[in-house]
Image 1 (cartoon, helix red, strand yellow):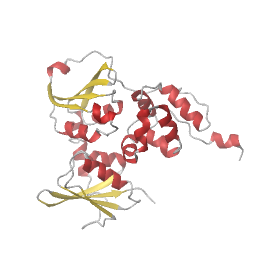
Image 2 (cartoon, rainbow, N blue to C red):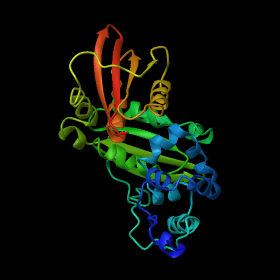
Image 3 (cartoon, helix red, strand yellow):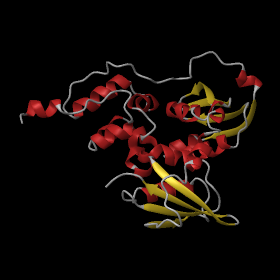
Image 4 (cartoon, rainbow, N blue to C red):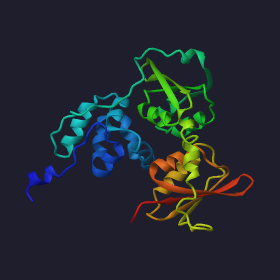
Length: 283
């Protein structure tokens, strides 16, 4: 096969591809991402890469890092030997620059969260944000301060019945309002209950056999979720992870569903549940 024929078989990178899909297809591009912006250095963390790679598109990643999406797409394609421009529509769905909706001042701000320090220290605030929104009722607002406009979060929370509005206050300083309007709840209650409702599907009767067991009962959020996701990285196709927890982790269930895992939760006793998580991939 000639060099030209080899190049034509490569899959071009497009603006709307998920970062995780890009790195799965071309692992060597991790260094190319990091070279474009310090924001991408967190992709070197396998846990954060697993969380965000499935949620963030190349265009969204570029916007978060303050880069031109078309330039990043062109750079990535050239790194794999393709001269391809970003000719397809780029979906960013920014909420900034739009008129302030009336609910920003009329609805109740029931939760406030400042994750700017988390971002500066390269800590992942995703679990904290999901915990905060899980406690909101319809008509209530989460007020979030961040170092950038969290474009991928709009898609995640939009599925849970939230609408958003954002405003830049200064360099590395954004305020984002998330209003729970209930669309997610009207669609099979919400993502958490939908994910948990499937827990017994494809599970054999009795107690599953676990290849790996971890205990997160003494940990404080977001450490349990991070430890669980780290353990999942070591789970082989078809194997099961057993997690000893103090409660049903509502914010974890939709994440497992997004990543393609099946789970079964068993009430063991007061303040103790066992969560069996199976890797559905085939070996």
